Image 1 (cartoon, rainbow, N blue to C red):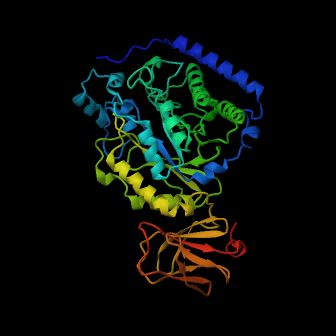
Image 2: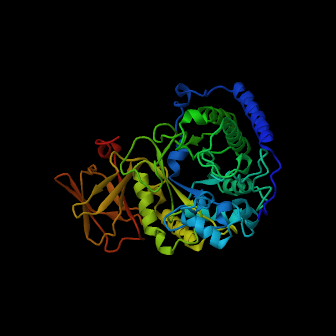
Image 3: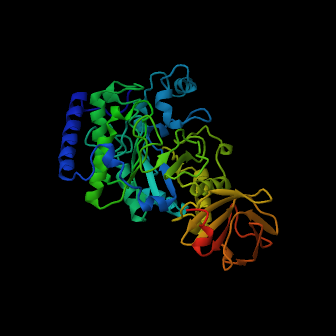
Length: 471
């Protein structure tokens, strides 16, 4: 059974088109060679201040895989197109029992209609959540672009939804002042019909040219504020020739007059190159303050793509998400929190409510998050065992109480304000009394702390006192 729209381009035609696009981009790059595809050049690029300030972004995994939307708990639903062909995998049996043994991945495409999708509604939700940038998956490992690609009619503008999803969403997101950057995950491609169906670990010179052309198409069409790559872990960067792409991106950004950022997923080894680092494994967390900017990437539940088999208890709570954000920011990270919409374009209520809960907290406490920088230490423990995190901005130290505090006072070792420092509750501005004894700061707390989840105190001081032990 093959109900999907036939592919019109042959492999040879696609490769020729890709070569033309790559040659055109080389001509562009020749006119603006500020950045060259070598380490000496591209490693001079600095992480833009807007990215350091933003702290909170939205990731979106939405695609053909959102139609079956099923994997066992704890797995990634967006990997359905490879699991369905692995005979020893639970998805293999599920697929045959649910859809039939002759039902191919491409047969899901006509069923992905996105009939209830409203990009304005999505952008409004992300803005209310407090996000400062949005990274939709432009193409996942299934090789299906969500934009109107000139390279192949195997895309969402020509098939399935028959809309340029990336363009429409970008217009809505940017109209609200958020940054935007479609991601590209095709460095691993396990399902591209132009390249003979399912093929894990498939790499060839022809495919690399095709990949480069697609990434350059994203760059030229959408002028992304972030170039977010993925699928890098199986091959070294020499195979992907990613330095060519990064130099091209940086040069284009100079022409646009934009400050841009790229992650560290250039090929096989992460945490070495890039304007910001990501975890080696998603859902892991870097548990210490590091000098280089990084980004924590994860879902609200255990999958990125929507998984209909994921119960509510697999989702984090608002409190857990707020604590995660605070912990990440104290350690020099942004949180890129994933949304997994349903096939019809609606975002599940549990995900909406979690985002809105984060937005409510940030509306009160965002001063301690946005635009801050790490202090000399990310965390401390009060004498009563309370967890504390710190951020710093413009002469103010933000002291974030991670535990629900039910006490008249809190004592924090080795926070040393000057004699004229003022300590307040961020949420209300209420001034608090404090004393020093043996390098311990004791702060008198009100009977009832305002708000919920994480409570924040501000210490406004001569920076020379609070920073004498730090940066």
